[in-house]
Image 1 (cartoon, rainbow over the protein chains, first blue to last red):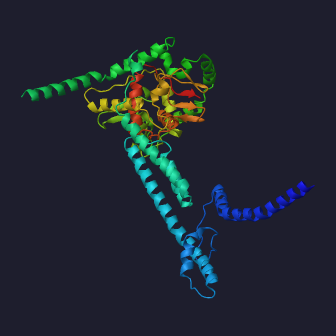
Image 2 (cartoon, chains in turn green, yellow; image 1 turned 180 degrees about the horizontal axis):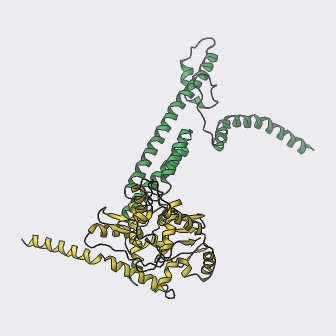
Image 3 (cartoon, helix red, strand yellow; image 1 turned 90 degrees about the vertical axis):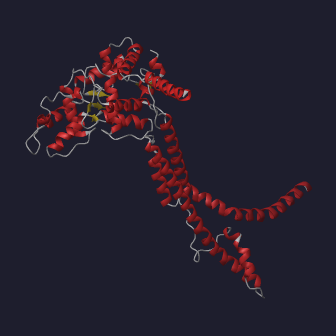
Length: 184
Length: 278
């Protein structure tokens, strides 16, 4: 009887301590989960508009302390600092996301240009492969839809195909009758 | 002085060795034909025109049954109609080809004036344009039908492709065609001979790979896969794409030279187009 009471008490105490901790952990983990869901749905995550969008829960973590430090300190300093941190976070989220978007696009544009150059080089020696141009087109389409990761993957594969096609054609120059035919 | 002499001798030896290594087209032809004749000793030489059906008795039986009511019959009728129908100016194909329509054995040939290999479809299109008509797509549709009629009228003719010795460009075109044939290409890294040389007669999924010898005699072909008649260059395109290489243009330089090489290898075989294949 005593053991049962003791165990029930221990369980209740564990739950009281553990549940809030779990909730906090889940709250902290939520943005990551949301991102995963977005990835699955294959819809590109558009960056929030700089001023209008609410601050994401985890995004402005780095920028917020600096904003808080710059906020006026006075009787309501703590509150003002927190509000400023939130607002600065929202601005920072937009400001950070936009250059990142541009940078990704620029990287993809370069990857596509490299792939196109590799394809043309292979074509110059009649070594182009069947799907290379198609992959470059798909990379461009992915980029236009904002799926830069997919675009990069396709452009990178297309570039590799172009390089391999060129190498293959150069290696095969002067191909002639195989030995097994000559030996007959 | 001694050094100069040694260099001259080395260059001479190198050139001599290169010349000795480079077989003539006639030697190539003998090598090519002998390989297949020895590989398939039970196949009479002229039977190579029937492709895989020369090797597979069951397939041949089915094919012969199909040939009783050939699927290319409509194409031949349409082609015959085209041949006899006057152009807008009142002239016909017969005005361009007075010896026609049985003219398939003359193609492809080396055109010294143009400095290139000329195919039958090119000359048919040239005839059309000379008479104010638009050229046709070379490997499908009405052109393939016109070719089917010409092929039927040319059955039994023996084609002997010539490589004029007085024009080195002709030999160069032949050599380009030969190189194309043996060049591995595409993501699968296959050449034409990968399937139709050492692997001819072997089974690829449900199909028996046909020997290269005789490949050019029976075109155009009604392929069940296409559901219509098509030309040799269409098949070239299909083969290139199957190995995941980018195909070339029908009647473009690559396929013209390839056809030149392949028909030279098949010299001496009778024509038996149009054909029916899976």
